Image (cartoon, rainbow, N blue to C red; front, top):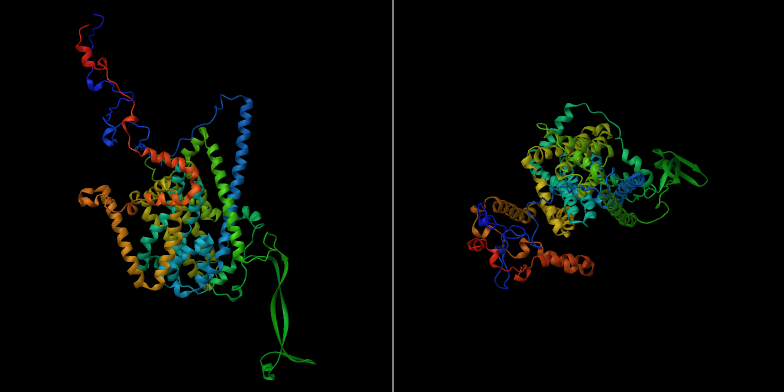
Length: 640
């Protein structure tokens, strides 16, 4: 018969029930639906799929036709555009590096006197907690771990600071050096996914430094292993004074930055070691050529018995003491913007701080825009694969250690960990370097920056050479110990997980990045510094309960995620607490309300997000009408 078939009947469970083959339950009234009504249907305002990894590198899609599809005119145009973009990229990168140098000079001008006063107080430096915080704050102020390390080495070589007291300060310097990359990541806050990756990259550097300090500082205070290990190394080698490092980056940038500002870095060191000649001296170098002359000065003699110890001359005017002194005569002024401007150091510092931050952010935004337009197509895919590729099995574990070596060598060459890490962060944001690859590069940068302290120590006087080199080796062994803690065992690479969590939070609440910056590098260090100066009892009384609460919250969070059955029912989530104690949403609403008209452009996006959270009603579903011929059982039961 024409309407019969020998094929087996299709089971009802296999019959398509909708366009997307997913079961849908439609509410019978206008009451809001809950999650039971939408088990698997992808609705327009549903949350993103949890299976999608937000940290996965984006695919660098090609733009325009391929090379084979273009004619000669289009090929020439593409080559010329590539050359123009390459020159622009190099130019903006050069200005970016120069702005970092000027930013460091600006911070030194603003905080030079404060830095010298802090380092000159031996009672403060004797407290290890205060020493740690001082290392962080001073490095944030001068924006250069190399400068901070050189100051510490100079203080040890001059006998003002002993080696044991310098260890916490060296640890603080290591923490403070990660502030530059955090500042750079803020420039990519325009795109949520780019900001997630960029801020996560800067946070992994800071988390590694902080976690290493939290673990190693108590161990060092209890055992002194860094002190004894470095002392044993120094005694086993015959160390001689050396020269300077090949400062390749300064050779390239100095011709431009010296036209803006030129500093006398010896003034900060002089203030730290208590040199009276540096007390009221300006950090701005206004005279580049100075000639020293020996001058004979005459002072009147009040008592002739003084002439028995010094030479005196007598003339018609009376008897005078003759003293030979050396004076400095200014010969030639320096050629830079502020050489003829008699402004105080702090005023010049704020001017340069504002201008350098503006240039830095502008250059970074333009660099990211150019990278986004250049890193497309097959060449970009090849570059990304080469950077993030691993060695073949069974040598894949060596890839990370090669990245550590590359990071150390590059930092040694440019003699600036801030420049190297600040260059990695934008590449992470645009999706060229993954978190897995950037983490060992940052660790290598920590190793490379210790070479500056080693070379500064080798330039110390012979009488204090061993102590100065010992401080530099303590810095090196501290970073090597951190690598042993947080990298050698893959399961213990905790900084990566914490940084990803911070990146996810920042992608949702962008103000969290500024809060993290202020808390990690300013507010918490100042608070700990104040408590430590009040005494160990006050520090333990205030900081102890806070530390216990933080540890308890971390343990409960781990148990909530891994072993919730071992927790009481009320502790399996934080809903029993007020919302402001376990969610950032109230703070986000507060900041949004405070933002006012500045957030007008963001309001539409916020309304869309709020609308997506509204419950669905029956009107949100397409009208579904049932007909008898839609039922397979009914069709098969009829006689044809």
